[in-house]
Length: 97
Image (tube, rainbow, N blue to C red):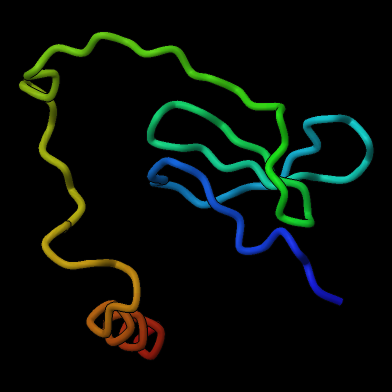
């Protein structure tokens, strides 16, 4: 069984994983994808994009919005996906506990 709509394409960048949500209340969850452009797009299981979408309104943000915030406690100097160092640290932590 093939899905003729996959892979599905859109005209934006995403910074999050898709989620499942029944936007049309038909009992079948669609795939929701939040884009960098402030849109939440919905795809049917077949991969076809739906006309239903949500739009998050743009907001004006000051250039230095981050000044005065506490430092980020997360080390972002290396990726946290497919990271051998994280796997080693988790293995050590599990073997100690």
